[in-house]
Length: 134
Image (tube, rainbow, N blue to C red):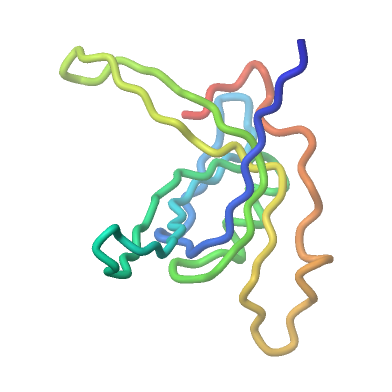
């Protein structure tokens, strides 16, 4: 049976990217991203809602995002959803759904910057199997 796990986001970077390295030396960069949507309530009032996502990038894509993304910038992120579980310091089981990005395009272009189409190549490698996100 076929299945599909794909997510595409356009939004604002909510935190400066944070880069770490796995024990085997692979770079991992994570950042928060906000997307907003507007709708009309049954009473006719226009409301805006914001959803927050944790985005994780690996390898060359991680290095590029760490170098060029900043809080407040706009970006397009394409990837898949992954649920990560761990035991907290309080002994409670915790879970987080993250976007494992395979492609990131910077939508804010400073003067003289490259075009968005040639900014960042797609990362088909994603997370190496032996490395955990953190």
